[in-house]
Image 1 (cartoon, rainbow, N blue to C red):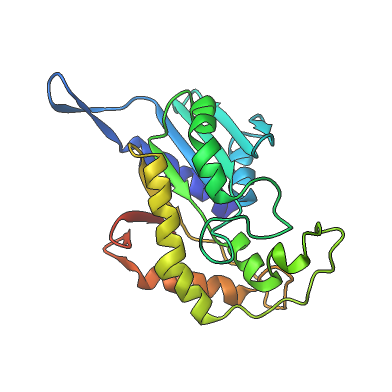
Image 2 (cartoon, one colour):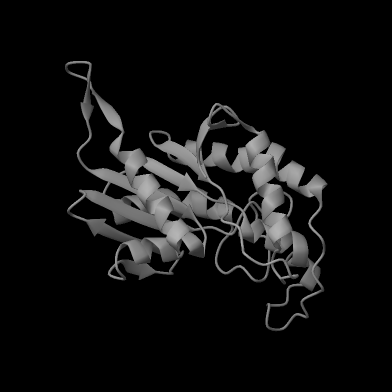
Amino acid sequence: MCSMLGLLFASVAGASALHVLDESSMTAVVQDERRVLLLGCSLDRNALMEFCDGHGEQTDYPIESAWCINKDLDLKMGYIYHPGVGANGDLHKPTALAKGPSTGAILKTYANATSFYMLNGSPHLVVVDSSLWDLLVWRLGTLGDRHGLSASEAKIPPPKEVTEERVQQWCSHDLPGLLQRVSEIFPTSRITFRTAPTIDHTPTHEKFEKRDIALLYKCISSSTTNGMLFGKYEVID
């Protein structure tokens, strides 16, 4: 949790450095209120709620979200869950274990309106994560593999090993596509990507292993030059 709280403070620091252009004078002025959106998984939700001392508001219909206000920092923070890039990197619903709509549907239908409702304005900064849900579907398969059964009805297969080839596709195709889509949905926002925190054990886990997270991190590192992922997006490590 400490490392994830660090994410929140890094996000706040990033947002505080934002400036806007005053069209009448064409001069840069400091934007007083900061609005930050975390677009990721339960790690982001838990970090936000911890940051807010458990006093944030939450809802899970039609999508899972959470938000809070820190008046001392003049900061509004929101969180929206999404289930990753999908089995083929097409932002379709990846697995029977993921509730609610696909990432593509969340971005197309809900993200903008939900973000505006939580933050009372467009986010200055959007922090994107896509990692653990991606690893889960690569290891356990897709909804189609279970012939339309729910997770409770279906027999979950033994986990498969995450291959370097699949991670390379994620890094060269799937993730750039997700970040581009987020940029299109939030065209005035600064878009950043956060890496997945590692885990402190090596035994096989149903959803992911320490090795898997290291593969994602290696790919992100190799695609980052001068602090910019794919030459476009800042990284919160």
